[in-house]
Image 1 (cartoon, rainbow, N blue to C red):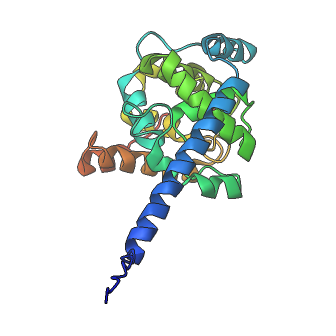
Image 2: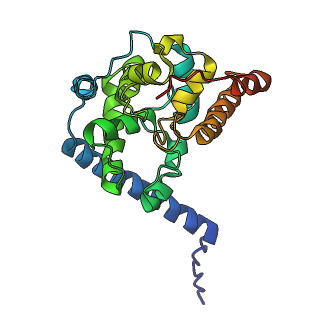
Length: 247
């Protein structure tokens, strides 16, 4: 009498099933992201005119462009505070992007925007921070990174930024607040000036010196965190006078 041996299928462990699902999900999301990026890339403008847009913005507000080299103190303070991975990313920083959903909900910047993204919003979105503008700025930031050198981007950002009190561009701001060129600013003045780009009216040193002092402290802390200054030097700079031009 023949006996039939039944082949039983080996059950797949639950962890393996979840692993396959997770991989499929990741692949699906990657494909979707690629499709969305391709669509957005086509829908957003080119950025070859970025410098001319900056120059037009400066001309409209009687600003003066940065010289060929960005003053080292201003560059160091700006990058430490606004985009410490500036030299390493492709226009968007995935470390900061993890915080981006908070910004989409609140409409505020929670530290996820690179200088490229901020510049894109200034030049192509009229400073808008709504979710669609932020989404377009992500694509524009990548285009800016591909089309311009880091020095060009840094110069354009400093020329396009508003520093409060009617000063557009770092040249006008340095002259207006301190009666000096950007290259002549000391550490105390440079850290006050850089602190203004986040909220120019709130941190205006002529109108709100205590808030400006607090913001300067944040900039100095960031310079310590990235290793540009040591703690003792930063504390000493924080006690130095600003020598403001009276407004």
